[in-house]
Length: 487
Ligand code: ADQ
Image (cartoon, rainbow, N blue to C red; front, side, top):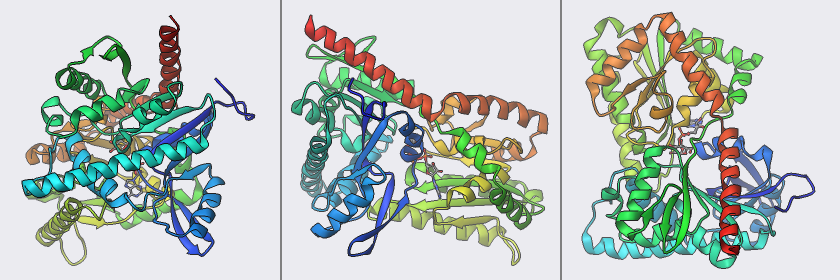
């Protein structure tokens, strides 16, 4: 492996989005802000161990050369390299990635549209998807040095492993899926199902959050491609692709240490004062249909209906950062969420107090930690979720309070934190309501016991471990396949 002068191995992380969003402040000037999201949080823990460069879309359309050049140099200071996707972005990202792949991977199937229109739209979006993957390849080619490891992330880049190997079969390529992988019965509705599978199989190592997702992937390859499932992964046309499980984590110390800062303690005191006399249930999600925010509100409404004695003693604080506003389904879910907040606050609120505080916004890191730390209950009701790092972040901030995590069994985290959390089926409003009651009434001793199990897991299965494990498996897999080729 070639090592840079910093003595660390070089790693090119390639993901749809850079970890920062750029905003133009002048002809030649840009402001750069960290963008929220699980992938970013997970990879922050990995960057330290490698000489890492991040390649991805900068979150903004730039059409002029002056702008492109100045943005490149601003981003270079943060070891980020932009891929300018202007011409294809809408069809690639809003269309194919978020309109087609995202719902399929989350078990929702293809969106219902007029059949003829759909075929036409599908083809346009699919072509844009391929073109965007080629544009990522072009930027990698400009920056690749022999020996670099290329780690591709997520469903946006399903063609990249194949393109990379066609360019240079010696590149060490890993691909990690941050979302679930559905059963083959759902996946096979996708018109381009085989091409996409074959393309990711070109990688040396494929990673998934949970055993179930990896198993679904392997059996999908056997059923759709006629490939063979082996103990290593998938064998297709004589090529073995390693498939393995790497549950992502967070950097727990970052959260634990932030909770100790005086300004964060001050924010906690202000929040405690603001909600004095009430228990706080917290929700923190991207405003996405997979996060089950309407189901969360329906469960909470049921709880208020069935437990009148709690009505003036509990508040649900929901911080929902809007995402993917250009996709119609997301606008629909936003409207549905707002309708439910109005209904529940109308039914159970009074002039001086409302049961739901719903904010469509992102909050800064220290305020997020303060919110996690003062909450009595964290309510995660994802309908499907690759992992759900919010639940890990809550646990890391609860060293003092030892609050209760109510967690969807359909989040990957349901498998990792299931022993310490109260698991729920978010579709079952009665079950969610009962779990809220149980969490609010849970004795301190029981809370402590559950927290201990959770925090131990969160500290052990950190983002650093996730990155280390993926990288060492990739190195090992690559050396083995090199040896096989030499033989
Ligand atoms: P996400 O769907 O973005 O990630 P999640 O893992 O919960 O979901 O991560 C969300 C991140 O965004 C957290 O770090 C959280 O702190 C931050 N965040 C969310 N709402 C916020 C708000 N209002 N203000 C500030 N920050 C906010 C995808 C998959 C997940 C998978 C991750 C990582 O969908 O299933 O766990 O990638 O693989």
